[in-house]
Image (cartoon, rainbow, N blue to C red):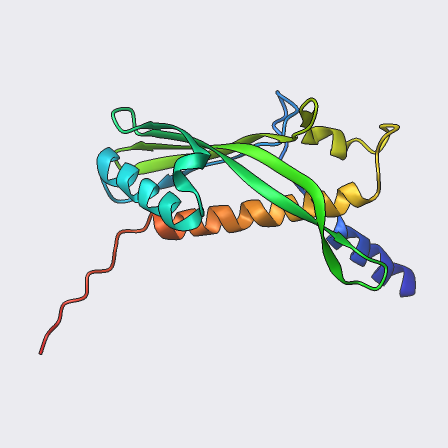
Amino acid sequence: MFFAIVFLQNINLKAQLPVDPDLKKILYQEVIQQEGNKDTLYNRAISWINKFFENPQGITKVRDPENGKIIGNYRMRMYDTLQDGSKTISNIIVVCTFTIETKDGRYRYTLDDFYVPGASKIPLEKWLDKTDPYYLPKYEDYLKQVDEYVSRFITSLKEGMQPPIIKVDEW
């Protein structure tokens, strides 16, 4: 019984990031059916970006309303867990590219090109390779944090892309 509990706990600790089977790269992507035309959905996406990010102008590289496309960078600060279980801010930042594309009745988000900036870009996929001589056990926790950051991003985006609720003041 003890071994079963330990095994199940280890399963929960492992990060499960989606990896594109062809490119062998971490990739989050989904098409969402949503009421609204391309322009309306584009404007909702811009509105969401303005609320979600502290510096919305600085994180977006492309804002193309004609083609319904927004491209930006999402930066995620990692945390280290100390031996006593407390968390401290790490010097590791993970960056990825996000793309939001809108069409009539749907939009697609894509998060890809995950890397750690430095003298050269270190692709996050290196953290998935436990046979790499530079692999560190803390990478597993970092990958889990990345997945949590991306999950919050996606959940918030889906909420932000919903049509606004219009309250009628009936008195």
